Length: 500
Image 1 (cartoon, helix red, strand yellow):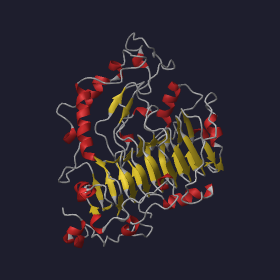
Image 2 (cartoon, helix red, strand yellow; image 1 turned 180 degrees about the vertical axis):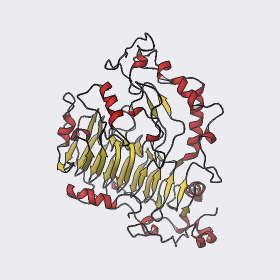
Image 3 (cartoon, helix red, strand yellow; image 1 turned 180 degrees about the horizontal axis):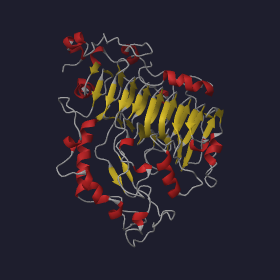
Image 4 (cartoon, one colour; image 1 turned 90 degrees about the vertical axis):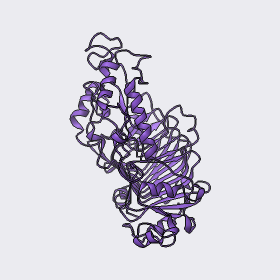
């Protein structure tokens, strides 16, 4: 396909935008795609406005404006002109599926999997009843070995090479109209990439066909489980009867993995028609916890490995468990002093946790609307085994709302005027202490009433209390925080793709 100004024929049929005559299709808010694409992040609008700010490709020359209707066109546009970092605008028209071959034919597990890979055999080889009978340093061996794990890795690498798309610096990616989608892939804003704008697009279903079982994730010797002990005795007594193990997947919908100065605005994120509730646990008790579902999706938007100066505004995050992670591990050397992120006027609907979960970063979160259902959430008064049974019995189809803000190692979250509307819940589920020591909130509400979120965080954690002195105060506001009681109606009316 010839790009932009070189393809008058495609312009005439509306497949490819002319460089100065973008399709005038309008989202619900009334702006044309061309008008949206020429907008920079407003001054002071969150951390992405720090320093030089973020204008993406808004100043792109006419010859650097493109439209993509499929993966091949998107990749070509992002790498066009011999200099991938030249300012460019890429319009997304219709649905762009990233899990396709060069002829736009969709690819599935069978197309990526190497000969011999068999998920049923994988489950047999690494089943806890077989793999967990011997511990090393108090856990089952986490680095799986054997033919099926080697084949799984090959399949995952093949899929990753196809569906992970690197975004260059100085780029704006803008949805046309109200139905622009990018599905079944992962946009990657990596180290060295700066100044990216993504707006008015629905992202769905970054589905990992080759999730990995980690037998040591969350494993512990817990005597509330019958037969759980460190030494193996028989099939009913030993470490194989202890809880733990998780499925992990590879792809986010958007990964800010070292990138800087990123604005993600008026987008919608969800798992499409393959939510993880369709893939329940595959091992018997005690490895059938709700958390042990076969995890084919990772985060919706994660910010890791030194990513910095990010603003997420007016987005809809829907029907997903582990929604947004800031900082990938407690030991990452790239993250201290980075990961500065702002969330404002986003709607987190039927999310389970990580709204966001933060390590290291200075995170400002205000006027967000969080809706969900805590049916099945753990009760601090019950044993782990009792909570295991409680979750299976109570949670239904909802993602169990376990925590909104995750206070991780050296995190400094500054929360203002957020509104939680959580069924079958208690304010203790709004905040989780996960290795951090400080957290500030002012003006937030929980189920129609003002709430002290610092007290809520501390209530179930008498030995690990957080203090409200986070050591900084935000100065970068897109607008003054609105009164909290106005947040639900306003955010519902304005968050998500098609509402600019």
